[in-house]
Image 1 (cartoon, rainbow, N blue to C red):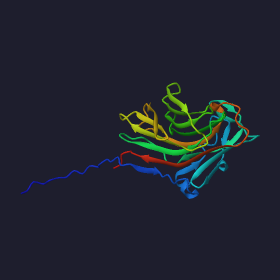
Image 2: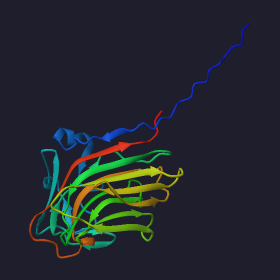
Image 3: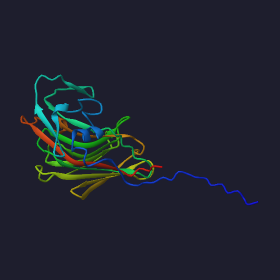
Length: 248
């Protein structure tokens, strides 16, 4: 009698690169609605003098435009136990997908942005925790200083921040952020601008922590005051996200 051979079939994990948000998500309203929602994930207010409003976000020719305009008579916002006067209406969008770096995995976040560096303007392209804060990765942040900031928050006091000069704000610049598992617990974050590596930072305990992806134009706050009296524009195009997370 021939021996009975038993085959134990186990799931094979693969880390094949696959798209989560395609670069065409701003091509039409239906494309946008597939991957994005308006405002912050938690509502219309945050830590600056602008209140987010759907009407301040437009799509045209594959480009997302957020416009901040001066307003009067808005109810104050509340953040961190403080009242913040609202002086602007602006806009934010956030991805419907949550981004959770798995063991051995990670993501690429890519986009082209035209961002102002005028005092009192505060555009951003960033990740923040779904279940609590931190984690936070500011993949690109402009705080009215003529520079662009790349930051990783491990706690409110343990922050790695890199500011570099931001050339030609009237032109689009490509931002790429590579977030990768390092040891099953921490992540490495590589920041690129116009295909040049600017900085590598590390997020402690970020593996397994779901994060929101947000594109927004805030005003004043960390970017100084007073902000401009005229409209401020922030534009994004060709925003895409690629996953390297394992899947069976």
